[in-house]
Image (cartoon, rainbow, N blue to C red; front, side, top):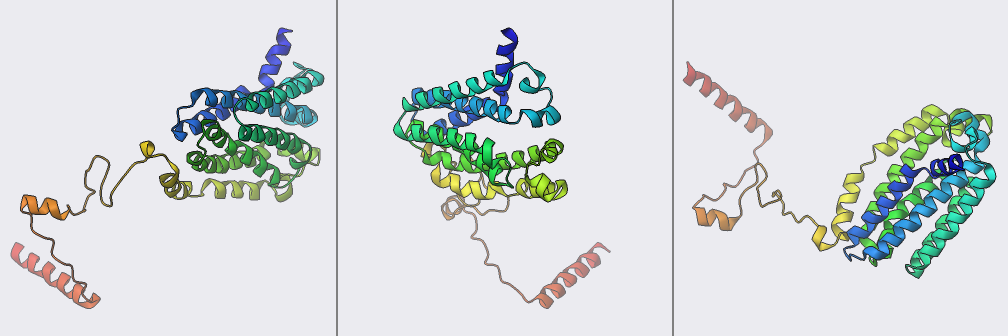
Length: 287
C-alpha cells in the first residue's frame, strides 16, 4: 500500500504540477483583483488536471518508458496500470468539480484542457509539432486560468505567451531525450521525423526568439496600473537621467543652464578635414 501511494505521487510528477500551480497564482496576482479564494480553487483544479494528464500519459506510454524511462512508477512496477488509470480518471473528475465552483468560463477551460490532454496522448503525441504545440497551449492557459478565476484575464495574456514559447522548447527537448524509444515504437515526433540535428536547430530557433521585445509592449498595455513601470524617454526609474540625455527645459531655466546648441550635420569630407586639422593642432601644441 505504501509503495503504491509513493508510486502514485511519483506518477503525478509533483515538480511539473507545482509549476502549473505557480503559473495560475501568478496569473491571478497580475489580475489585481485580490480574489484569492477563487485563485486558490483554480490552483487546486490545475494541480488535479496536471497530475491526471501525467498519469494518463504514463499509462499510455508504459512500453515506450520501459526503454526511455525504466525508473518511472509504471515500468518499475511501483504502480499497476489499472491503478494509474483509475487515479487519472478520479483526478480529472475532481478538477472539473472544483472548476465548476469558480465560474462557467473556468469550468469550460477545465473541461477542454482535460479533453485535449487525453486526446494528445492517444492521437496527437505521434505528430510533428502539433502535439508539442498542444501541450504548450494548455500550459500557457495556466496563468489565463488564474486571471479568469480572479475576474480579469487580460493582464495574464502576456504571461501565457511567454510560457507557450518556453514549454514548446521544452517539448522539443523531450523528443530528443525520447528519441530511441520513440523510434523503436514508430512514434512520429520532430526528432524521429526530421532527425535529431534539425530538431536541435529548431529548438535553438525557439530559444532565440526575442520574447522580451514582444512581451514588453504587450505587458505595458495589459498590466494593471499598479504593476506598470512608467518611464519617460531618456529617464531611468526614480527620475534619474540616462547617460547623455538632456534635462528638461524647465530644469535648465531654473538652474541657469545654457540651452543646447543645435547640431549641424556636415558633409563627410568636411568632417574628416576638421577632425584631421584639430588633431594636428593638438599635436603642435604638445610639442
